[in-house]
Length: 363
Image (cartoon, rainbow, N blue to C red; front, side, top):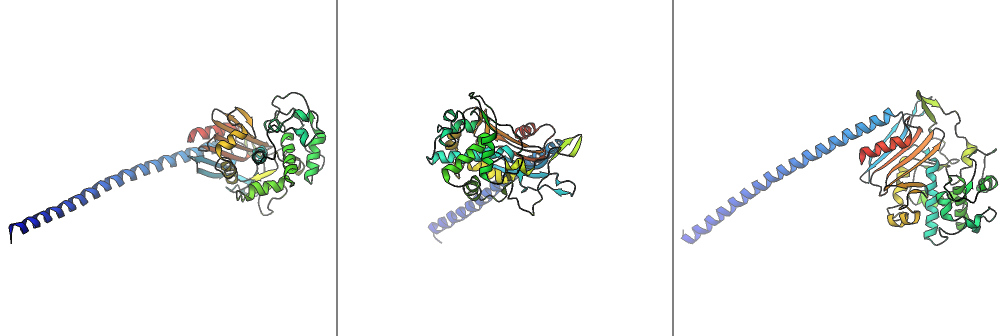
């Protein structure tokens, strides 16, 4: 064998040895990397489990009964139901149980108004006399005033004598009951949003309910959202309770159909926590609005009540109360960390206080 061939063979052997050595090194390094990643994942999972345990205990200690949905980093992090929907028959609350969302409905009504603004059918400066000239000072009250409760309209919040069976009677109830003052200070009243519901109908030629079904329920594929008079018969609805020294004390003045019938656009809708979360996302993810578009229309850069939500310090909060039913959303404006609580027995410490503590736990 010539010297040249010996040299070729030696080079080949060295090359094979280098390949084997490189393969062993890479495999070893990958093994270390995988081990490190695995340790990090286990640590993260352990912290997440501990966090969920602490959240669970915090909620139990508060005597809250109902459904909880918590979002962390834009994803559902915690979803759990507590207590009974019907204590007497031992029927538990479920994650998909529909609860009366009370005043949280105002942001849904407000979103449709803002959609109509986006479509050019009205502006935030359009005055109320365009639709209801019979209301005193209506020529000075704008759509923005109605959205933000600066209209000067006042109305006693009480149930009507009879169930209001159609939209006309529901709006007439408001028109016949409200009073108006010149002051444009903040004065919260359901009347503002019932009038906005009527304006939606006047502009679209469809009832408020038809607009909700078309523009919200169907568009967002919501499966557990109903009007008060269209609830599924097979569903055991959460009954309202209070914690007074002990759990499940009956609501002394439970909400009845007469009151529900008077809350057009302002609090006659039932939703599950997950359906409500889908709606909240739609205000910023492009389904209904893009984030900057919605924030600009609703005025989220200003502190205070804007279109159904209270904005402050980069956060948002809203609460709806109907007797023993109490619903809350609390979180950041970018929907990265959000707490949604739907209760049929409110937390003993207060729903806002519980939602704030839960938010601090995840932020």
